[in-house]
Length: 361
Ligand code: NAD
Image (cartoon, rainbow, N blue to C red; front, side, top):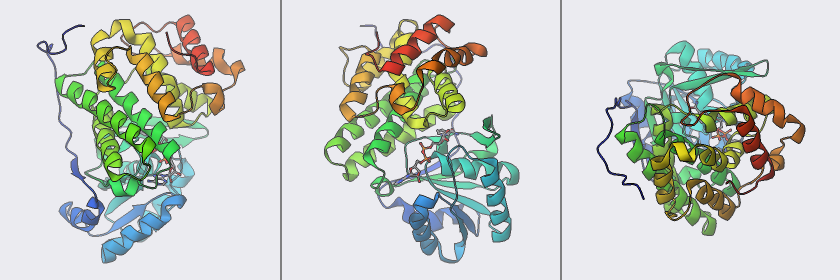
């Protein structure tokens, strides 16, 4: 096995400025934390499904809660952003609180982009959006994404208690989605020793938390591990450039409407198999973090997903065989950096394997 502790290559590292408050019941710090931001009144954002949680937060905030907007929706449709903007203006709020997953945090980012208001995020999934300055708004079926420092949350409160009700199947795919961020961070062109440490520890924590969750779905310690892993993996996503895996998932989600986290979970082992021989040290770290040092990273990830009961084939989540050729064309249409050259025929083979859920080679 190659030594993993050799001296690093020259690198650049920029630390993220987000303040992180982590721990069971940490969400009770909400009022104090908006005070530290110098804000007076918050617009609380959530999905319709998480309205109850937003109401509890509002009660705890008292006069510091200006209003609740509860229509956050997957992929941040422009119509929702426009409606939320009206609610924001009416509320006179001077900060945004996003309680929920990537969809709710995405809405807060779209509002912050236009107004410059600070975001305090309380993530309740493992998507990692809270640690990135990437935003996206969907208009006419196309999601336009961008990067802007104004949308990076100023404060993130991670409270594992708030994730106890996250359904097990969503927890698993959301957790695999987080592992994907860290896995690609390990071979990113702009990676550095700090990102490598965060990524390996993030994968270890997430996999260990998910394995515990399988046996005890309401275990706070398991949830703590997962959320800790989500923070680390999200930090990697916010700091390092992503490659083949994320591009493929973006294609499958954006052009074929496949669900975000499930798609990530299914594609990850195949993307790792594709890049394996061009990123050997990243692969060793992934296998080690999964406590499967004797296995390839691709095979260990495939086994983890299977062990956790995740969906294993693109055809099981709505992909049509007839669309695979087009998906391969779109995935290679615009060049991007990847450790291994991205070739159309090989990508088509990868997609066939992922479509059928075959063990990656
Ligand atoms: P999500 O936010 O859409 O949440 C999925 C569902 O789970 C929703 O119905 C939500 O109400 C519910 N939910 C969330 N937390 C819950 C909890 N603790 N208990 C019970 N129900 C809960 O899903 P997601 O996977 O977190 O986010 C996906 C979106 O985030 C996608 O649009 C993706 O593109 C985006 N995203 C963006 C970034 C970024 O850096 N900008 C990063 C990752 C994901």
